[in-house]
Image (cartoon, rainbow, N blue to C red):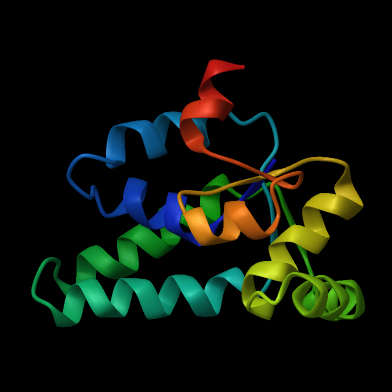
Length: 135
């Protein structure tokens, strides 16, 4: 399963109303594969929560370390960028999401995500955490 950044962030930063399901999703996945670009997105997301005063710097670092521990496979973005660009152009959707979609397509799986726009752009390559857990 490819796991989108938002699922990790909601689980690891214990975002109210979402962290239980997000955490259950991560724990239920037999294999978690991500593009290496996830780390820039994760750092940016954690920074926003720390900057807003919701978490300390130490808590942010801890969340990043815990997230890394769940990842079983990490694929370099340069292996995905050509297909990601094709997908982004055809769906008129941001490439940072299309990288995840290209990875899911390559691996014959789906991206689990809370991002509704992402799900609408790539309905055959994405699944919500609720749907994933109901399988």
